[in-house]
Amino acid sequence: MRVVHSTEIPGLPFAAKGKVAIIQGDRDILGLPLDPGELETWLRVEPHRVVGLVVEGDLAARFSITSFAPQGPFLWVRGSLKAPDIALSDAPMRVDGELSVRGLTGPVEVMGNLRCELLVAQPHPVIVHGALAARVVLGVVETDRSLAVVGWWDQLSKLHPSLITDGQLDHRALLTAMDKGEPLLA
Image (tube, rainbow, N blue to C red):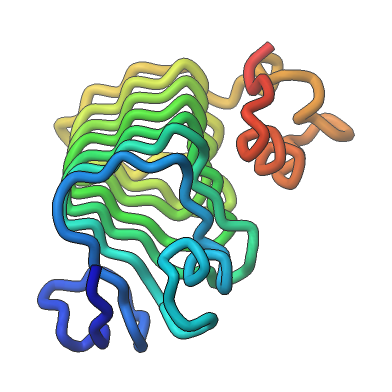
C-alpha cells in the first residue's frame, strides 16, 4: 500500500483533496470501515489523514463495507466488488467493474453491472452504467438509456418490518441492519 496526494491520481472521480491510500491488486478482506479514523486504523496509517481509498483491482469483503459519518472517505474500486452489504451515509463510492451485494445504500456509481436484493437510492444518488438486477428498489436510479432494469420499485411492504418507522424507511435502522447482517427483506 502507498499513500499519495489526490492530485497525483489521474482521472480521480471525486473532488476530495488530501492523502489517498492506494492498494495494488485484488484483495479479499473481512470488512471495510470507511468512517474517518476507522479507515486509517484499518490501513495502519496516521489517523484523520486519508480522504479516500483506491483499490487497483477486485475487492471481495466477507463482511459489510460501512460509513456512518457525514463526509466519510471515498472508495474507488478499479475492478469488481463483492460484499454482503454496503451501507454508506455520505461517503461516495465508484466501482469500475461489477458490483454484487445483498443490500446497497449510499452515493454510488457503478460503471458495470449491479446485482443486489435491496437497493436504496434515496436520499443519495445511485448511478448504474451497466445492467441492474434487484429484487427491491427504493428511490430513483440513474441509468444509461439502453439499460434493462429488473426490480420492484417503491415496495416498502417488501422490507423487513424493523426497517419501517411511521410508514417510512428508517435509514438509521437500515444502516444498522446492514452493518450487523440482519434481515433486510420481509
